[in-house]
Length: 470
Ligand SMILES: *Cc1c(COP(=O)(O)O)cnc(C)c1O
Image (cartoon, rainbow, N blue to C red):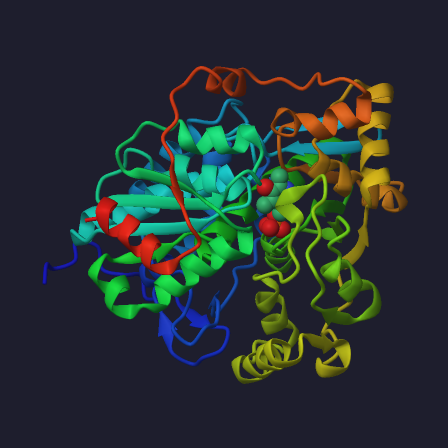
């Protein structure tokens, strides 16, 4: 074994939400999910309350360095370099700029390579992977099933990187043209895409079954990209601080609220962490589309699985929110045994309720609502007519649900999670014409595409992987 150049910082410790053992940051990043099925959680959180004022002029990468410092066992110079590499491809110098629109603030998270907020985390994760692999000399072959934005953001996070390859599968004909071309036109030799004759669930099953074949998994050093990786959540807490601190400085307010269009509970959980680390958040407004399992939980106290329905905001068409376990862990006062029992109960019965949970230790910062198709289209139209501002359908869900929470002296920041040009059909439906454009998406039309076709069959899928991975 090669000796480590950088001894791990023993202060940075993680635990599984279902276990007792502790882990370092590198293992947490490289393995994604704990072996006992739990999600990695830090054993302690820093308190930044006293620092916020002094940070108001920090650039995005400088702020990221401050926030991530206590969590990451890399030397400052290394972390700084990885951050600068991750955020220089963003098209705005502020990385995630804030824009005043009517009475709200829009936090534009879509200036990365694939025009959705997932770039903020996946650009950084790709660079972290590359760094750890070059240090260990190992290889990593990633698998991903996608119904939309995750696949392309993951591909753009790892394309051209050494010691790493990725295969992304998606249901044939069920992702948008634009989303498909954002994946299949990437020319780098470490990227492989396949369209599966089946549903998104079939794709996800192929990935899960393959990861469960331990021989195959070890032979090809397989890993997965999904929203449960701790580094993704950590990267997302940064923009809550970056935006929150700026809005406090601009308005003189003492608190702010955030509205977050939510699917897997990853993005809004990052906001919850920011609040636990001292950002004075009055409300975290959780907004869902008609797939409202999370909204129902925060409204009625019942978390019950339903059937996923296709909507105008496909990246939120999710019924079981994989990061919700992290919230349960905090609700049980960081009790892994109780978290495991709750998750087992949910897996068995499809339901848990607040009666299964201890009461919250402090007043809940969460509030929730949902927006149906009509409300989403109306909100897009209203913002275009009144403010000449185009909202993508996910952002419109958040803006709609946030409306009743506009308060005096509490600035309201709505997360804009995708560029409207990614969802031209919804824009056309709302406005009667398709006017959302972005130059990078226009350019995709002329590029050659590479994509295989696969039946929803595990053995064919493993052969496909064996042909491409080494
Ligand atoms: C993924 C996604 C969401 C939902 O984020 P979660 O972290 O899954 O809650 C919202 N909007 C867009 C555009 C997305 O791609």
